[in-house]
Image (cartoon, rainbow, N blue to C red; front, side):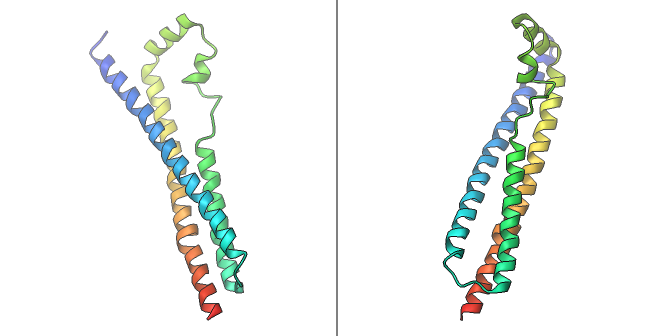
Amino acid sequence: MSATDPNLTAAHAEVKAEITRTDTKTALLLAFVGAVLAGTWTVARDLPLTVPAVIVGSLGLALLVGAAGLLLWSVRPNLRGRHGFPLWATLTPEEIGAAVTRDLAADIAGLSRLVVAKFTYLRRAVDLTLTGGGALLIAAALLTLGGAA
């Protein structure tokens, strides 16, 4: 074993841990977006909504649905990947050992690109959630309260 092997192993473990953290954040945000969508629907169907509130609220809900789509896209399995499980499923046990030893740096690079893509989708979903659920739905609620007064 060379001196770089422990460093490669540590980098590989770090990238895999980052995938897990990103997937956990994605799952939590997806649950939150679903709860906001369900709660908004439950509250909004029983209120007398003004036209501006309907327009702003509908835009907010559309952004939340878009955020949910991005979150689902970020955890969508990639079965055409060159590294990890899809590759290993095609190899014999002896070939797996050789591939892992030989291609650890390539696996780190591939997994790192995967983490960046997942993190980008997650960041965009957070932005949409803040805009849709935070700003627009609150604005729609204020428009409804102002119209009801």
